Image (cartoon, rainbow, N blue to C red; front, side, top):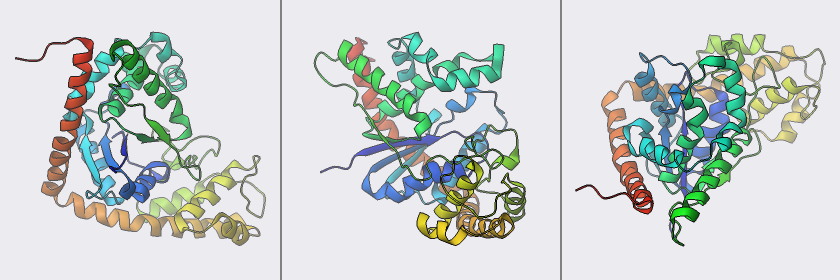
Length: 335
């Protein structure tokens, strides 16, 4: 029996942080031998908000290198850059033409981000869920690793696939309906400056997140200055202590200890005792990633070969799906 196929990706906007690692990439690594994996750098999504064109290409290579440094194994996984495969943009246009506008206007993340951008909000911000649907559907993915906040996007992807299959499939399934793959524990890592908000690359404060490539001094500074509370004794799952729950969860996930063991270890601790413990745990967890990243970036030819081979493998699948969709919609074949 063939393995189920996974598709996921990360935007090359800023450095990857602990939220990206714990909530996504580490889960990819741990389960990659169970699936046929396609992991892309979603650089087309990166320009839905203001971006720096001078760094976009370099940032894309950085993300690809971090995939490898975090443990993505090419035995089980394919890594590629989204914009290197034109089928992503082409299928997105075709899907745009069958996607009702009100479906996109109802997307929660669009409403939240549009408020921040005001009158300068671009069409791409409204439309990027369709591009995300194209990313997933091109590879006929069985499962998509998503956080709880992204489930709405996957539901939209399924709705679009159902609509295309129903209207143009003539009783056949053209696009597979993907299922979410959600890891409950630690799937949503929160900000160091506000335990009620998700850790994010878009947060203007660098103190809100720990980046995977942060030096030891920066990690120590951020944890030392992170938001806490005046209560002695640390505990999970107290809604009145969101920062306490978040920091304990980080310690649990990066130390490899069980929730019960961490709860027992930290029940009588004060922040002055816990923060150095968390700092050392984070530094030790990130050190092998940083060392491997440095080795990969020192060998540019190797990284280029990984992305070239990844593009060739992914493009073969993407182009086949695109051809099937175009045929269903009535397009002629190129002569």
